[in-house]
Length: 313
Ligand code: NAD
Image 1: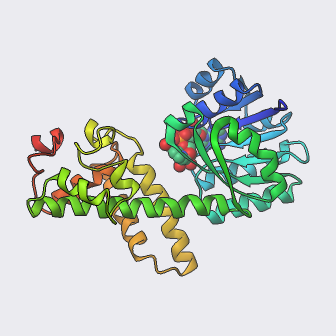
Image 2: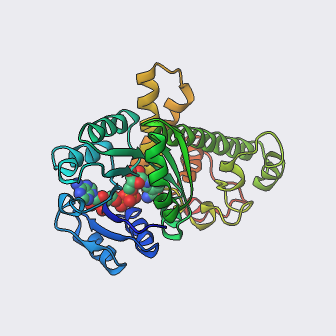
Image 3: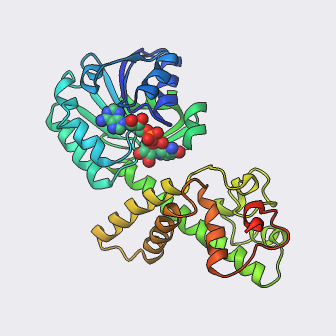
């Protein structure tokens, strides 16, 4: 692979290890983050520190951003001068999870400034970022995708071209809407099963090989026991943290409202996860929502749950 000069802005939980993997793949990576500790950790992994995002971009072939939300990306690109600082024809790769409308606006501003752009949000979490096993969902024109692909596969195992600008973000929020709704459905079914005297294992054995089968059940099972590796077995330590699910469902809900889509379950899931993430689920895996459902149902965990925290209550 040809070695590139890459500016990497946003070296947090995800961006830090992603930038480190670009260094490992032989690229020169110039990084910036507002938080000095994040920048220091990246420098320890071989990233060169820049005093500002604009300074990082000045000599780069490619600018990667991994930021919290759309407003950060748009402010950085425009008001904070990132687009203006880059050489004409630079490829901008935004890996943050942001609103589809913001992604399209960022894309438009980038092209208007004489550059190329792709939106490339990820799934796979911090472990995937560290192990370079992320999946990238990419929106943008085919030439920009072809240019970005080798860099994305240095940070992940797969890059899927989903369509034009914003299509990567669209794929991400649609997928996570399925996941959020299905986790609530699986959790409600387990609590209903408890109320009917059904053991977790019996429900799992039936549903995981029947038409109720889904990732939320068979990989991230929200009750301890049936799937030993699921977060429920370690007191709901994430995993995929509930606040991130709440964020993604909020983006899906906005898009559904803007598009006039009657996504009744998606909107309800967004409200349930927003409440869970602000309350008991702030530091939990998103599967911990089973405990909130149980609590609202006035039930104690069933005898076979091994649910230490809930049993203490
Ligand atoms: P994070 O908060 O750990 O990292 C974001 C970093 O951006 C921070 O270090 C912050 O200081 C920096 N930053 C913000 N504005 C900046 C600016 N103007 N200039 C320079 N640095 C700036 O967040 P994260 O967990 O790494 O997530 C990043 C993105 O990835 C989010 O959009 C998130 O939704 C998405 N994502 C996260 C996960 C996950 O498991 N953490 C999984 C998939 C997708």
